Image 1 (tube, rainbow, N blue to C red):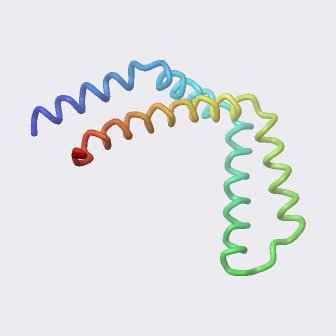
Image 2 (tube, rainbow, N blue to C red):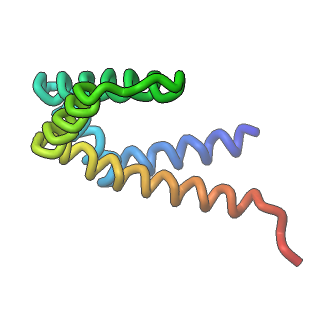
Length: 112
């Protein structure tokens, strides 16, 4: 077991030193410092959750709620901090997906 944990630590260190991880953490930090971006993100999440709950409960979604959601999505699209974060987040997720697939491939039973 110790050998596996040691390999896992090396994998973690390799990920931390990878450029995609570094760019992700940098963009995440910038996003947290951008009050406008944080506010937009929080409002979008709140409005999305509200609409989701209404739809889940089979209640009508008011035109005003849809309009507010659309406006928030437009703000997201025009905010540089959010756009940069979303791009590097996508790149980082792609890296982690490839890592997970490689691990899963090794765990899969050998085909005869």
